[in-house]
Image (cartoon, rainbow, N blue to C red; front, side, top):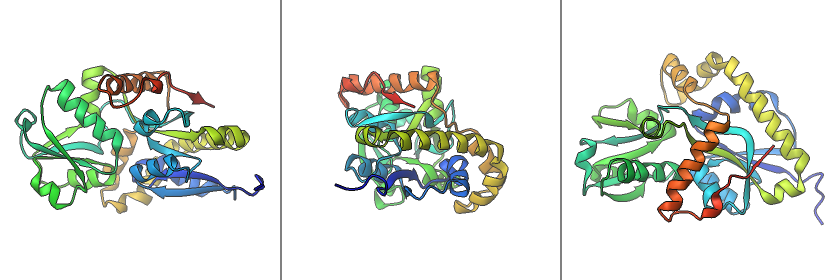
Length: 279
């Protein structure tokens, strides 16, 4: 039987700058040799967690919703926003109402944001469109009337002039529901909660500590990460300051509302509710 004392705890981390206020502090100050961080884009982390290649990680909240029997949610951790998020957009060549019957390309990097686009276009605006999934800089993008992009890709597209219409999905959601939107949570395998409860609790506490310290050091963090896009440091600061990393009662209510839409649409099971949150 494998010795649990030397078994690594595999932690998935989104490799976009939207995690920098937490992850930059983690890299500077957390040195537990058993805690192995694996970086990837959101949909890859979703896949890895689903295939038991991770014990926990920041994944799309949709990943939790489609496999609620496998996971719990770590308390007080998310990637979310109350209003405009600045990095989850529907970029369109035409007005939103003119998208009826047209093709919308969904980034293959986020299932959560893809579901959010469908809710916004179909439930909020009452539109019928066709969807394709793929890379936002591919030929499919050229063929599509609108493109949903997230993270660093969205920041790069937002700086350009290719799309005259830029719909911030978090802003639309907030205006229709009055709630924030939770893009990602820190989901943990049920098996990891059972086998490594002390590690899981310690990791949760460290992430919360990093989040608090990152808020204090946000200017310094922006100086370190803004060149990745690239973007002006002040613009990076405004962007990251608009993101939130807690999972308070309003955020939980927002997840429940989102999952309620998905259940009604037949995209997930009703077993996604109530939320299973562990400290």
